[in-house]
Length: 239
Image (cartoon, rainbow, N blue to C red; front, side, top):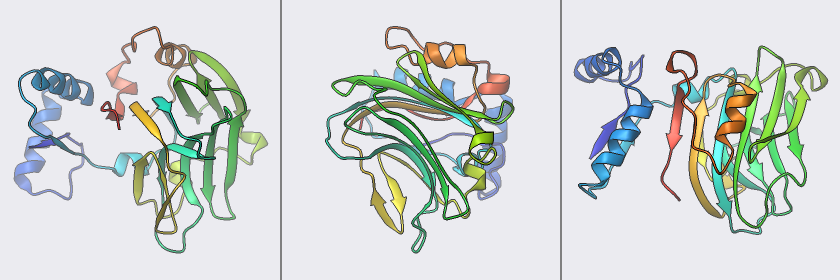
């Protein structure tokens, strides 16, 4: 069964689905509510579900917050948790990804070939033998990037020290988003091994306090005001 997640500009759809999107959003439908509905539905049926959503919002991110709950069981040197980029042939280095390594590094790359190569990382930041909740925040207003691990802010980098604030919208020809890998030159790279328990992508820079609360293993995810900080992507099934 296909489950459509409503989008504000469903220009690739016909009139019937466009109107359905408008009615759903006008009625207060959100991604949060859809996933809550699926949790209830799953108690009654195990029919396979496929989600239909627009990736346009991901591809055009000017800032944002990515929160990932995962457990790695792999010894791969670099493991992408989440990526967005241009993975077509002859495009080796046009991507954004959040990655981890087996020696405890949490890192982020924002690349657009030779014109943009930002590498933000913190060594020894993650628990290499268990589950971690991590987050990356790209804060355009404050001109900085931050890394969070298990409820703690572990690293802050001023964009001014890198060459100015850049994010996904500064990558040429973005055409994909992946969980557990990064597409480079038409092939999958940086494969993740383990379980990605959940990923949430917000189109805004959430407050430090909110991100710290979200990444604490012992606490539930706090509510985020829908008016400004409603998340635009959520994946809550283990892989």
